[in-house]
Amino acid sequence: MRKLSTILCVSTIILAACSSSNQQSGEKKTDSMTVNETSNKPVDAITGKLTLLSTPKIGEPINIKFTVYNNADTAAKFCKWHTPFENLMSKYVDVIMEDGTESAYKGAMAKRVMPPPADSYITLKPGDSTSVDFDLNNAFTIDKSGKYTVKYNSAGISGIVIKDSLQLNIVK
Image (cartoon, rainbow, N blue to C red; front, side, top):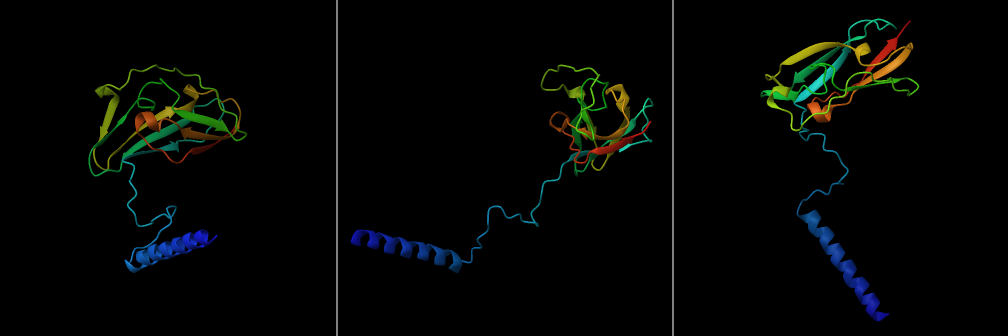
């Protein structure tokens, strides 16, 4: 019992000494989950945006503008695979109805060799952008009116980060 008391006493003294040592040296203790608001967060060099061009109606083209921006101070490139910058070769967006039902994709699905060849990339100058329009009906079966969400799903392949989804209200 006496041995246990001695061990507890010594442990307490050592812990107290370590604690006061950190406070005296002026170190700030921070929680590992704390977010430093002044830290430099990396900026995504290549970002994109989906923009609806007209009121979407059943049976009519649903035209969307796909814009890519270079936010870097230097030239940057992105892969045009899985984007509307190439012919319809893949399902690069998800189209989901308000009830969670996904619209059926009816386009082609290309199998590719990796890595992409040099001609698969588009280079943008610093601060530059480029756009292309596409008709959502060419790739998806959209035959019901209602609210839809269009979300870009191919950032891992193209390198284009699109954080916001596009909300559509398709009418008859």
